[in-house]
Length: 127
Image (cartoon, rainbow, N blue to C red; front, top):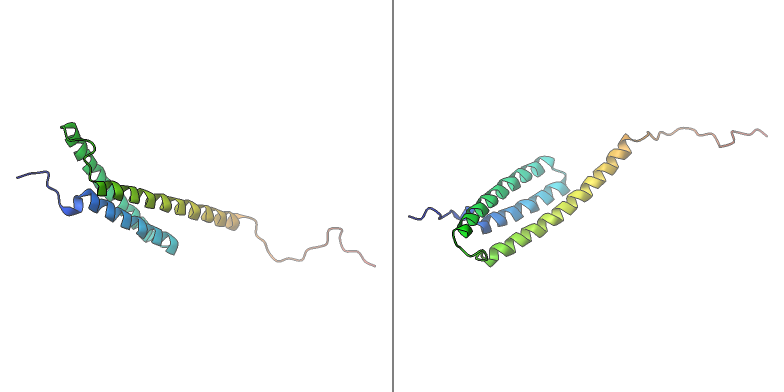
């Protein structure tokens, strides 16, 4: 029996599809302001990336054993490029949100603007 047969969930196409879905979930969690869900999505993405790295290491072993390097299915390459683009968009959104949060933090930690009576610059003149 062939020991290199893998389950469908461990195929790179499936991993990449799940990764793209997790990135989309991360975007939703970020925009909805749900930090717990965002953290869960990030952990899921890390696990999927580890699975993909494991698959790539296995493929590197096969390439070293004589399999042609360009034998990766076209759909895998397309899925990887789509996931990469989706991740780039998420990264840009995350940078924008981080910038907005830094601005808000700076406003909140800045001087307090209280309503107070202000005296005119030259002081009050009596006539």
